[in-house]
Image (cartoon, rainbow, N blue to C red; front, side, top):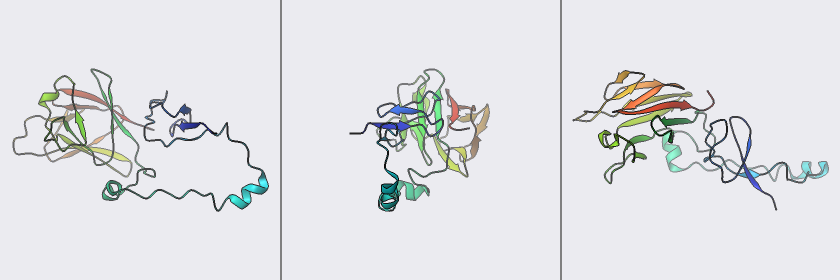
Length: 185
């Protein structure tokens, strides 16, 4: 019987299947557990040749959301984006195409924030994150009564406009401040 482990895609460290954060800061929640390579018995060379073709794993079928975004879940080239809340150090993982907003029954945002100071000033669909060619951008969602701005490093992102995000940037949504963490950069 083999033990399953998660291997960090950033630093290569091996972790228990239940762990979700690497010591290098990378999130492990989307890494597929694999049999521990240190516990697997070696395959004799004559068996490796005969079984290589039949045991090749096939890439998973993309799900509907990944087709819509133009990426697949496992084989995407975009670097993971993490927002670290400056007041609580809570981490929020962003995926390509995510909308972030206030937690509310009428919100359609995939990432809904709750239990943060000032979250009641956040729009229910406040901003949109997109990654293209390895670079992240945030777009302030335009609405008729846009009252609460989005800022990147003290530069206001006008409603309907986008702004690039880089590792270490300060992202402010209303009065909620995040530090941008782009994994692998």
